[in-house]
Length: 258
Image (tube, rainbow, N blue to C red):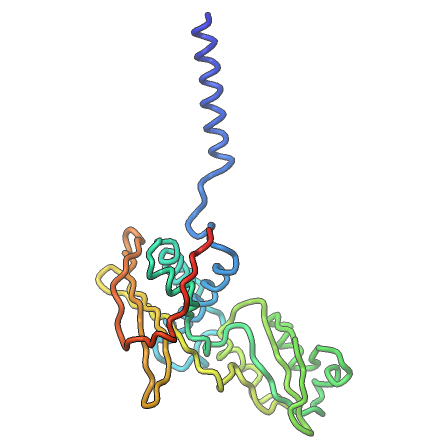
């Protein structure tokens, strides 16, 4: 009787363990990434996906919506490298090497005539646009976050979006509208100092993280190269290429906090 009772108690214990395992499943790939890093990787993936879709063509001629299938693939590849535990992966992520930031995905600026009909609310201190410009902002869930004086007759507004878009294509909708003088999609005075390139070869994805800088004579670059197997999605390091980085450019490598 005692043995039967012991077996019953053991069975209840094992059942409890199984039920707890269903209530607390192991984290899926990428769920352990800090929120700020996941946000960076998603934005990098969006920029790379836009460029992959364009295949060298003008970004302004591509779709406004970011190709989600490509963006998800790129994100998964970046996550696999981040979670690989490779020292070189710690270097490229902790040293903030990003995809080309001149590919606009969430912000642009409109320089406009202050007396434009659609700018009446803006002139009254309300961060809203009227008329056709206001309709476009509603259609794409855009909002105005800043307004500054540009010159005696014109102002400039910052337009942002919570949804990531191919802004080079979206701003074409605003081109030629009455009162719109110019549209800027990025700060041309600040060229990107890093980039991420992805290429598929021999059943592997080749991902390069590149740091760029200018010397007295020309532009130099240094890359950390990784491979991710298509079948296993396992990441490996494939060496460094390019110019030797000056010691003063090597950022300090902090120990990643879990």
